[in-house]
Length: 189
Ligand code: GRF
Image 1: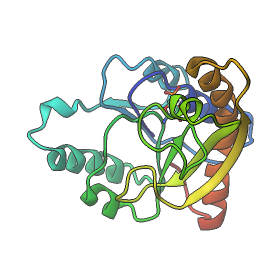
Image 2: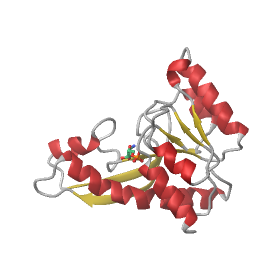
Image 3: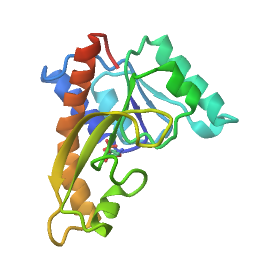
């Protein structure tokens, strides 16, 4: 799994595995940010962690080559992005064809990119949600694995909506991983 920050989705996936709702193994959690609070969730669960700081590499391609190398060295079958704040280069995506998932807090294709909750509010939406999708070369545009709706309530702030969506993300991501692993009946992530 690749993270950059809080890691609440990582935590939800760890819990789903521990509670046998998801049959998978997390081979490694890699963060581009040494201070990512989410790394602690992995350490507490006894999962290997690795910090690869992108600023230590001369180019995106060099950084992504290093990431791919670490993932391949561990035999990772499915790469799960959870709040990983880096765009992936075409070479990374080509190294794991149809085997990279991301979670996004909107009903894609609505509100891709930054601040999707604020985008939903600005749009006057009454419904938003969360999407787990395959990652391809276009930002937040790969094939959808699972989506779940979340109501936008009167008076919502972006933070309130984000918190409501996040609860749903925590159920949706393990469900989506189970679906993808079930379809490919292969190993961990
Ligand atoms: C989530 O809202 C996810 O949808 C988005 O970034 C956030 C990551 O949260 N891509 P966390 O680090 O999993 O708590």
